[in-house]
Length: 377
Image (cartoon, rainbow, N blue to C red; front, top):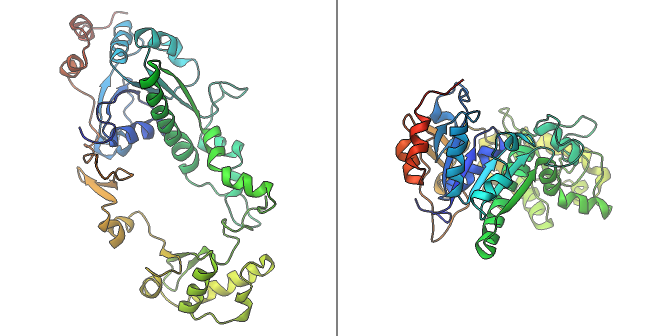
């Protein structure tokens, strides 16, 4: 394996959403990650389409059986990190909580991913991304003026404020453990993470520069120069001409000489100017606008769908997408000048015979042999 995390060993208790995303980020950067899956956990989709599971091997273990728990503990002895995303208390009931694992490996970084966090009055309640970002204030801010909040897929909670925060926290703790010789628990919560992603806007609101009225602010579609517009062919473009010089370039290329547009920051004019901009962009197709605006300082880009984005010439030049086992998907990021990681391996089905893999990790022969014996009732 190559990449900046080559040599890092991670045990992932397989789940959904943010946990697998965090594990994918680590595996993309060269960490050796083994996924522990429960029997029957497969979702029925062919393994190669489970992009979040790429780059790592999987074992199926019935954690209701002591022999399986012992197998995980022996993996933990040789790991740098454990990732889990169960409700608080589940890992403890399985006999795999932090105290037990740290008795086996005092340097272990124990990463925990939940929605509400390990503590607090809601910590044991069920929930999903939409609930966590609602509690942090993030969901309220997304949407059009006079309309309700818009669900922003699960980018903010699951992936940005969840999995990416967990991966960041784990790497911070690994760095510290290498100095102190001691591991610790990383409590990553999507409520915390989505609030953290909103830090800039909490600051602007405190300064009186951001309104709680969604769709009426500088960066939420309220401004005519920071929005998306439909074109003559029904496709969309985006403009983000915030700075005066970029706004002037946008006006120049689009032929906008109406003096009302001189008052760029007059919020009272924004709704009217948005309507006028909309009329302008309806006069040409998206490709026609790309021909004159793309690559200029007008702060412009076409709005591409997931079929179009991998084929765009900029994304192709940067190799921003890769094809793995016939599946087009985003490439690992960010880029490294000296320790570039390999292209991830395709997601794999669970090991039919885990014995060679377990021996490579140092699991003892008796434990491996017991795994092959039928479970006792």
